[in-house]
Image (cartoon, rainbow, N blue to C red; front, side):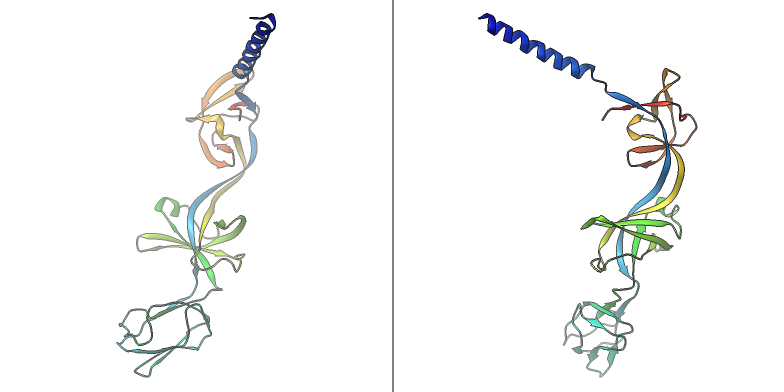
Length: 256
């Protein structure tokens, strides 16, 4: 082995050693001060865009459908004829809307109590949300909501709880959304965040600093671990609910 090769091997070994030392000795934590800022608690659910007005045409007797005056998707005005049967009865639209569904074809026989067609109002809409019991007890009228749709994640819509009520064994929230665009159609689903609480002067620390309820802090030069009670999260921060952490403490958190 030549002298030059020996020097190269030694140099390579030294470089490798330096890299290892840098990795090993590189600080894996940093310290940050707690912050004072707003935090919002939210209930999350899936909502469905729903028409305020739905009408199901249900003849009360058996009859043959002689004529439909409109196809699915067509608009109707209040008083427009919808269907005529072999009994000579003509059914009329009770409000302005759209034929969203026809369940039968001309020449078929109606069944009493079964819908023949459905009309919906596509303009007057709301978002209907089904809540579990735990969430329902925290939701109230006039609470603010933020909504987003799968194809418009960059666009946030804003609503307010109009009412919350039981329906059979479910709990439903009726959300009014004033800024829905025409592209949002009845039946589309939305991710809904309902603001159930807000505190503007919460003590916030990094979420990553909390490990099984414990936080490592440096207070007056002394490092210690304390158990804290946490609340809502805000991005990468979490609220501290008790007074065990002060604004003068330094919070030890993993370096990202």
